[in-house]
Image 1 (cartoon, rainbow, N blue to C red):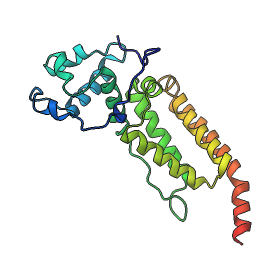
Image 2: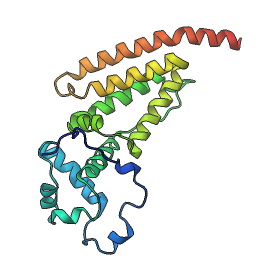
Image 3: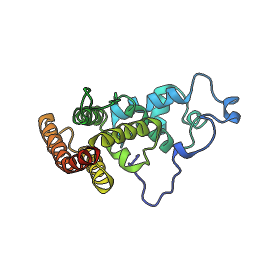
Image 4: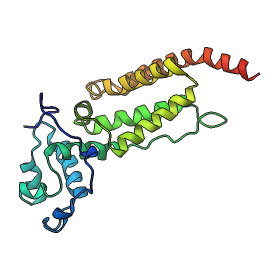
Length: 216
């Protein structure tokens, strides 16, 4: 059985391992018909169908019509595959690009789009929430998500500790909704999100006034 994290186990993230996706010694000897992309896609499908606790390399290999050992030509551990699958499905979300204000959409709308999109990913893939808590979550799509959130925080006008606090509040809100995403109606989620946005706006108003006076 695969769990989200194995206590006491020391792992190296697949994203921190230097070198090509398939080492040269493997590319010349690996079974034909497989590649890391195909295996990662199959991993995500198996997790969607059977859940995290039933995932195994043997079940994955059976679905691909290969032996379990064939998978290890492309990844070192099952945890590599879980990290790869996690980042793959995070890439399903369309990220708001900005810029915000000056006649364009405000950061508030951008944050709503980002949060609702992330909620949909969690609803479509229930295994994402526990894996996000268990792994560094530093793949390319995760980094793109964080960059989009950083742009939104920049657009609020908040500075220093206030900006840090708002950013932390948003991240906790998004990750905290993982366990309840299928139980809570979307209307409740949107209401809670509006309360969060209102709090950020309240914090931003005094700083905006100070900046306006400085620019006058």
